[in-house]
Each structure stands twice: as C-alpha cells, then as structure tokens.
Length: 349
Ligand code: NDP
Image 1 (cartoon, rainbow, N blue to C red):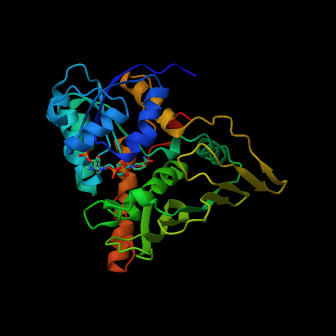
Image 2 (tube, rainbow, N blue to C red):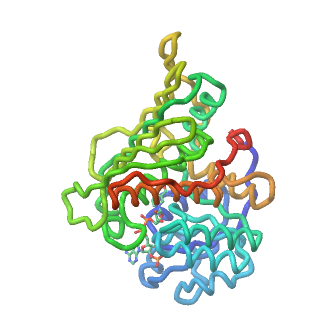
Image 3 (tube, rainbow, N blue to C red):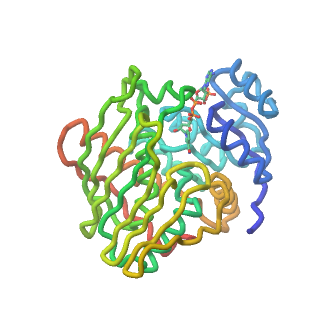
C-alpha cells in the first residue's frame, strides 16, 4: 500500500460520524487533526476533550478554523442542511474539502459546492464510503470483466434499525432529513459507477412505517431505469432490525450476489453464479472503507489520484435521490437530471 501523505485537518461538526468513524480513521491513517469548529460550544468542548482534539479556536468558530493557515483540509460533518455553507466557506478559504454525504440537500446547492471547489482549485471528496470497499471493487471488476455478461438488473437492500442515538434530525422535517438522503444516496453512489451508464427515470414510494413520530420518510422503495434497459431496485429503511443488506447484479450470463456489503464494516462476501455453478470470489482488501477514502483523498490533494467519490459522482448520486423524492411526492415517473457518467475504465479499481 502506498503511504498516504500527511495533511493537517480541521473538523467542522462535532458529530457522531466524526467521533465513531472518521477520527479513528484519521488516526489510523497517520493524519493530523488540528482543531474543531462547531455551532455548539459546550458540546464541542466536551467532544474535543473526549476525543483529544486540540481547541485553539475561540468558541469553536468556523471562521477561526478557516483562518488557520496551517490547515490543509477540512472534514465537514455538520447536518446536511449546513454542508453548503460550510463546504463553500472552506473552499473559499483555500482548504481542500472532504464533505459528508449527501453533498447537500438538493441538486442546486450541491452544484454550488462543486462549482466553488472547481473554480478555486481545491479537491472535493464526498464521504460516500461504500464504493471504496474491497467487496464493491470486486463486484465492479467482475462486471467490467464480463463475468456475468450484459448487466440486466441490480437489486440493493440497505436496511437496518436506526440506532436510538441517531433518531434526531434524520426523522425531522428539515431539508436533508429522511431515509432517501441518508441511505438511498449511498446506494446511488454504488450503482452509478457499477453500471457506468446514465440513470434515466425513477418510480418510487416512500412511507413512514417506524414506531416513532417521524416527520420524514423512514422507508423507501424505488425502481430506477438506467440506459440499455437496465432495471435497478433500491429498498432503504430505518425500520427493520434483523434484515441483512445486499447488493445483487444479474446479467444474461450469470449473477453476482454480495450479502452484507451495504455497511460501514469491512465485511460481506461476493458470490458468482453462472453455468459452472456458484463459488465465492476472494476479497483481499478488508481495510476500513473510511481509511481507503482518506487515502485516496490525501493522494488527490497531492495530484496523484482522484477521490473515490468526487463532486461529479456525488451530484449524480444526489440526482437519483432527488428523483426518488420527487416521484414519491408526485406519484408519477420522474426523469433524472443525470450528468455524464464517469467512465468506469478511468477509475482506479
Ligand atoms: P449528528 O447528529 O451526530 O451530528 C450533526 C451535528 O449535530 C453536529 O455536527 C453537531 O453540530 C450537532 N450535535 C450533535 N450532537 C449534539 C449535542 N449533543 N449537542 C449539540 N449539538 C449536537 O450527525 P451524524 O454524525 O449522524 O451525521 C453528520 C453527517 O454525517 C451527516 O451529513 C450525515 O449524513 C453524515 N453521515 C455519514 C455517514 C457515512 O457513512 N458516510 C454515516 C453517518 C452520518 P455542530 O456541527 O454545530 O457541531
């Protein structure tokens, strides 16, 4: 493995994902965390102390962090409705930006972020972590190498019970709440580069089915038509505690089954079934997806690579989500505002 360049990081957002996933990943990858900014000083103080983060910025102000010339890159993990202002401010201060998914709460705002990062020449990575997984890379390679012939359909089930500690803004009615922005955006970040074609149209139904007072959808079922008549089905929910996740790709010469791969843990398997029967395909890279994302991001900052998911990829994931929400709201089939797909051949496997 190539050693990642060491960057000085500032964190915007004293969030659960920063504490449980990204700080451990930053430390495993030998990155330097210089400080934290937050809109809630008391919460941030306790968060910084608990996680041994230096606190050089008065009252944890975003502006103070962004004025620090020693910071190379900013990790934005505030709530989804704040990604636009935080990511644009970070880019405007000349910092490279690793932003949490979804990139923003709608396509227009997400475009503003990518445009600002492009104009200012800073790297934008988006923390859709699943495409980095060793399992997902094996699935993409099998499809690209023709192991199942021509892809005809993809099924994704991305379901779990939303942990109690996360039942706040996700179940509220602020922009960016709900299971589509939370989980379907991950699915789209997986399926788009897997197929490498344009997503065309969506039909979707969303519901509120959990035993809580949700003000946004907590389960969603969507059917998406990609180019070449490929059918994609996404089932996302916060509501089922014992339902395993999976990714399946069915082709005219075989099928790929990947159980338990829609998860942050580096687990799951890849099975190939064709005329020779069924066999497990080896997955050699079992590193944490967040580590791989950080490795690729830091190398992108040095101009040696591209982020696993860049702004363009994140816009296309957002376009799929927007179409799911629009179809569910209107009850009609909706066209997807999809940009040109990134050629899968251009991707580092
Ligand atoms: P949290 O609810 O834990 O944190 C979001 C914000 O809420 C924080 O940034 C913080 O505000 C504020 N906050 C949290 N706890 C407190 C508290 N006790 N008191 C006051 N304020 C508090 O969100 P998540 O970590 O679940 O999600 C953050 C982002 O990460 C979202 O964009 C989400 O979509 C994404 N995410 C990505 C995942 C992935 O796998 N890539 C997984 C989970 C989440 P402040 O910013 O002011 O510090």
